Image (tube, rainbow, N blue to C red; front, top):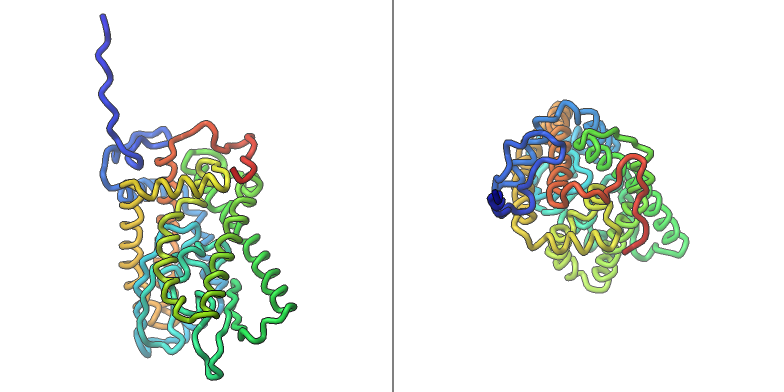
Length: 353
């Protein structure tokens, strides 16, 4: 007796079976974002320790903490942040406290104030986050260098050789810290979702070098924008759509390093190809819309001073964890549970291929 032919597999990436071996009640859904957020919510208890990452990265940005707590409810600053998937999200990915305690803002990128935040999304955030902050009283431009605790503005005319060396060293240290943090955070989430030990040291060894190179590439892209803006300030306007486009095309890159052990250049190629598929588009759109809705609520809360900041922090931390973990789960689904991905005891990928 000849068995019947198996039914055709017309499922699309992003709607396949769960990779943790459990039953998948969301299989076949055309909404990959809803599916993977639901998966993370179902397993939130096991992922809760990772909430320490967005909690700490929020608090170490002392400048924004001070600005938020100083607002004191005197005025409401509303932020509309269409954030794309990013390796590190926290409260400041959705809220940018006003320096004057009033006003509104619009942007569309990820977070880059913490080491390892998605720099491809930053040009849209605000002029000071691109690099040049615009004309000053002396009709010059400032270049801003963001550290985890403060933002340093340096006039262009003060960019001597020694200052440039200092900036380069800061960026290298910044990228190195970010790479280690991302490696442990994303690698830990990926392994926990597969019911494997986190193995933080193995995650750093396997993923940090590529994440470090990724951050340096992103910094170089931002510096390129700075250079063009110094020559022609009108180029800052072009940085907004350019940042959005790059952020969309390559948001999967750092996740591919971790989830599928993709070599450096291959991760960019694969993310670019995925950018033209339905699930990738729908996930990014849903992520951006949820981020925008959250930013409206959180920005109003943070405008309430210290108490509002604390409440916003308590809401933003689990939201940030869920969104990042959902992206890890989504990329797992896009790639499938391939035997070539790094696991405990296996060798990491090498080279730029």
